[in-house]
Image 1 (cartoon, rainbow, N blue to C red):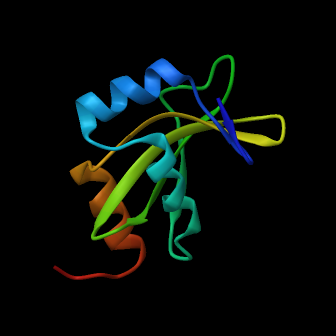
Image 2 (image 1 turned 180 degrees about the horizontal axis):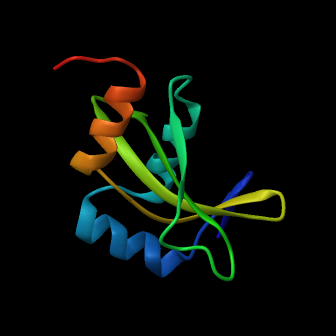
Length: 96
């Protein structure tokens, strides 16, 4: 499924909503956060590089797992994970 410059697998989107409570449509918003943090996932790199984007969506910090495919950002996972929130807060000097 393609939405502008974002794409994803329809079934993975449904699975993600069930497991993590967020749709990939909503997850796109993390990339709009001007303070978003993008890091490479060094554990996954073959055959394509994978990344994590930590950004604010609504009242929370979401981590979006993705890769670049051509001119699109392919999302394959998203959730409100503590590690991503911690990385975002540290990068933006936010104290709890």
